[in-house]
Image: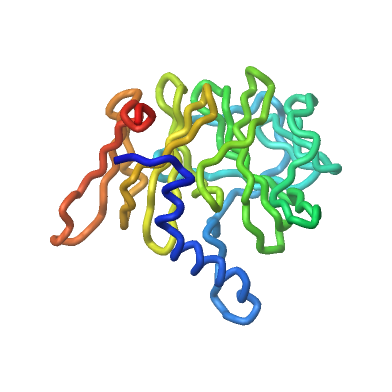
Length: 242
């Protein structure tokens, strides 16, 4: 059975608590890292016409930009705006909210390669600057055609720096991992709705991800002889019909 994204996170309460504790006491405990700790590609400014080729399923180099920098035609301005070809998409980029009204705004952005058609990008807004630790709580879908940037909900901590687009670009698939467990989230690019596959899997080989059709996906599960299933298959149409 597949469940909505918010409901599914209750199942990961213990994992979230462990990660939260890690963040709170990272100054005292060596080796503590954010669940989004990955290698990114620092990038110099590029022109608005730059569109990268689709990435291999398991190898994606999302670009990190600081204020004043541009990638794939998207500019993170010195005053904290997100522009596409000089058009403002976001006048400010809040990352997290505090009950006392002290909001935290993005100090760096992590940007995916464009979708195969060049229409979409995923942009993560992060609390810390290049030399500071910080979570990327806010995630946005940039639609170049509509000239919009809409906040999306794909994972509590922003998900891995990994996305797959269906051939018709109706859906995108994301992966979130925590404490050795991985799960997949599908996003409807037309409505902005997201749903999480109920299965939580260990030892996923993201490089094995393939589309069996525009609505079905498959990925290998790396496990020992005791593993019941060596492949995971997901049906996006069935997921959103629940």
